[in-house]
Image 1 (cartoon, rainbow, N blue to C red):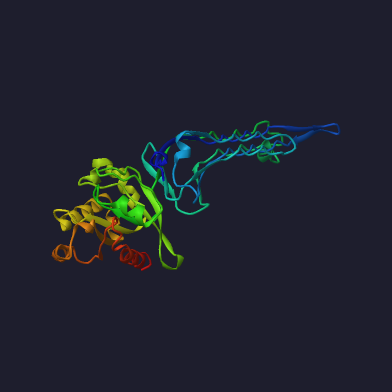
Image 2 (tube, one colour):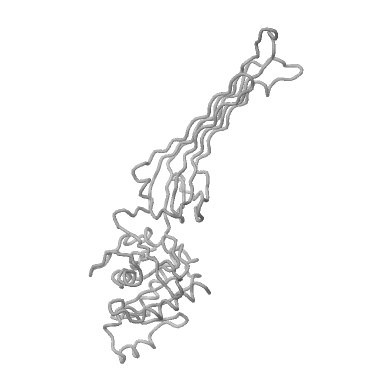
Length: 330
């Protein structure tokens, strides 16, 4: 997944179509000079529709096409002929996309299934023709109803990555290295914090040709829930993951403290994140010998499965996959 091509936030301007006007036509024929009203209804205006597409993974295609206009409805005509419906605009988005209004900031809906469709902006209804207004005492209505006007506005589409396992940890904890080893993903890896600025997805192969999706989330720092270090942009990608894999390096000063900070940031951002299943991986274990490993074990938090791994030496990766697979399917 190329970092430059990953777009998870776009602001677009959408306008629906206005409804067509109803016809006020009166029937006039050679042997029926006063045939009465026969005006048809106007066509409906086009809708702006958002549709889920599992083959997309970014909102890049909307970055350069920010103004979307649906077609207007056609006017009604004689002989009770209705106007043509306006052409709809279909916006295809990846699964996990949330749509909200810019002003006021209100969440409208989210797309989570393939082919799921939601109307972002509803088109105007077509006006009624004069045939709807005739009666026994009012036989020649010379008016018809106009169509409803169009609706328009700025909307925000945000992508929240859908994955089975989300990697949670401070910057430089080895998340991208792990993803590059267990999957075919090629995230950027460097020895400095915030190398990863966008999520990376990888398919992790498991036994018997099974697999699961792993997401490398950019690093979280203390204060991320208040927006520090682009915290809000990063934390939202954790919301759609089934299992959270907390990754803390073996050379950390206080593993339990780092874990508590990460959990607290998730709680501040969204308390529901604490209901997700958790697994801990102690990374960079190539720096440890057995004696140091035994010293660390009593300091680890209780009530959570812990696996010691080294992505460089590829040690502990099979037990880690086993633990994650059990967590996903439990």
